[in-house]
Image (cartoon, rainbow, N blue to C red; front, side, top):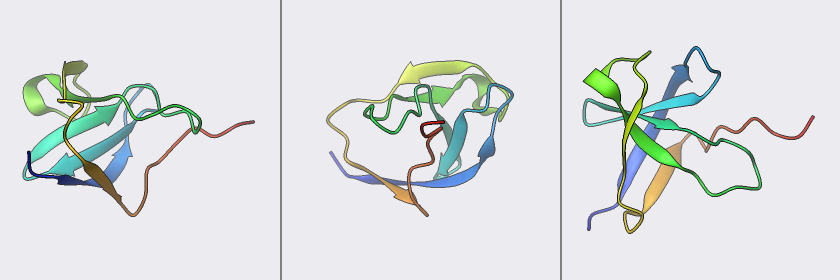
Length: 73
């Protein structure tokens, strides 16, 4: 499978990072620093859509500028 590059475009109403690749929107549903990304498409391909279909875990992903996480407070 071809790798994809996700570009950060903002945070949704649940403070989850939203990314874009080739016109398709993706969300990291568990953006904690110590957890691997859990990426899904956005329902209806809308910024505030709910998480929809998980991406194939075999797909290699890179992030621009980097993976956005909640961090540890």
